[in-house]
Length: 246
Image (cartoon, rainbow, N blue to C red; front, side, top):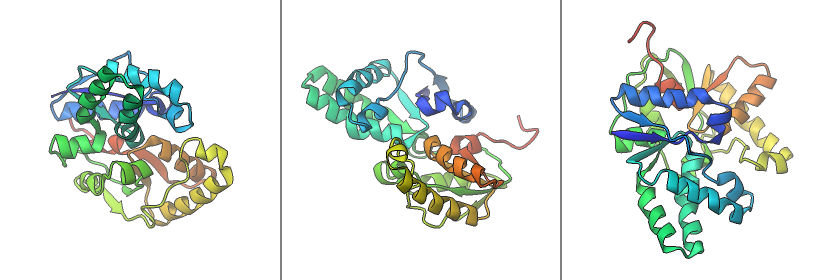
């Protein structure tokens, strides 16, 4: 299959290893990866902060850029949620029938990374080895918008030498929420304190998720507390192989 990678703003600017990991996993499974250099942003940052008019040209650009893509892989549930939940609204409010048709045609080809593996490609064992204790944080968009359910767990359980640690309060937000963490800093910090305490109590070495925005928020708190616990996107764990493996 030919798969187009939309890297997302966070990953492009701050976490390039995640995109590299996605490519390694998909190529290991025999797929061809395209990276369209014309891609920019999905428009989520503008849309979520009320700049709806400014978001529309960005949305149109995304749709145009990926119009001919066979399948689109996005290692971020929040960006996928933006596309699925809000692109149809933006298109219909525009009253442009071509824009509406393009969005409707695009949506069935857009997948978050873990759901692409399990639901589209039918794969749970990607040949990964990761000898660490790992806990999984379910980001709000993955849980409530995409309803990924146990998909990430099914992938993690197939990773060789990995010990999966249950996280108390799995359905609780980490407190990031984009600009929410800035505009409501006190509330965000309280939510973050609760979540990091639960993460630390698992005894895990690594906290993973399908969104680096959440992991960035969590790592900041864990680092300030000088804990040895680190964070890693799910793709980075699934890209890991045993030392010496080809």
